[in-house]
Image 1 (cartoon, rainbow, N blue to C red):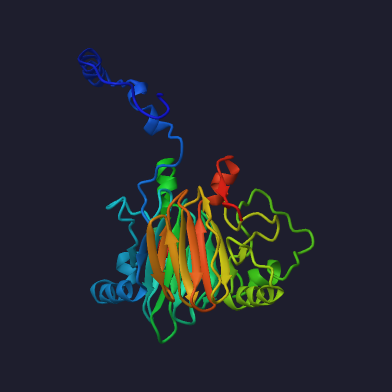
Image 2 (image 1 turned 90 degrees about the horizontal axis):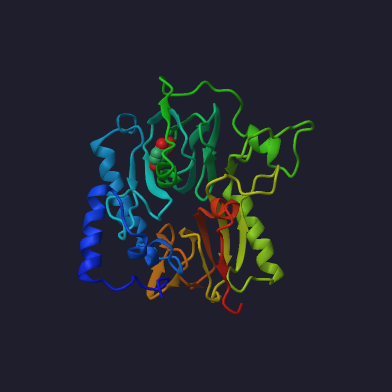
Length: 350
Ligand code: GTQ
């Protein structure tokens, strides 16, 4: 019975428990069902952030503080199930970052891994270890842990992207290190686009050795290419019952996820397509690049449109339905769970 509920309390037991706390002890059997739950019991709740509402507040921040003074001008998307904890799922952080024309977010590095998914703006850049990549809507960009990175905007328009970082995971491990470079920009090492030419064409430089790098040598995955792949696969008609047409971003040198702690995917849901119920242990953050739809997440119904962001908690059944052809980007801690033998999924009967 102790798998389901704690043994009953008696005055003698309670008196005993009261003497344990001052000795920095606790009785496992009073806590067992919470500590070793039969299924994931997450405080994370399904939630939707409307892009327009967040954007309006973010633009206000643009008048209050510069990117440079803020270090990073970001509004954190906080899961209402864990308020004040700077996290969107148990292990992941997400935010929307604004870089205004002419601004620079100075070079720094940290042990947290970051991903960027571009929401708005054209032509601003992020630089990773001195290599610039120009960012456009829907582009997926990675910043490996301990890589120097700075962001800048030489375009005429505000640039907004979603940041995803493994901040809570690194915090849980007490493994955070960070340092500033001491100048706005890390010295430029290679021409823009070098990483894609070298590693992102279905080819690798002869003699390339990966060493102990756990991250993809490609750090920019342009939207137009990924979108075209989805469109071609859509026409094959072989759609996954739970996912529609879904591709994951990979490290081309290994076939593994692009980063060790976060996995990201892009999926197309054809108009009118309704996915079969699916649940998995990796809580996931979604944003739409195109189209609109409805997602039923546990008991919640979330209606989303372009650039809205929503979250699906661990082990909560989700069904998506697209009102028109829709494209969803998503990310989660799945690579970690896979490496630790923890990942589980349930495709219902699909
Ligand atoms: O762009 O380097 O949203 O260091 C949070 C921490 C973005 C960044 C965030 C960061 C960054």
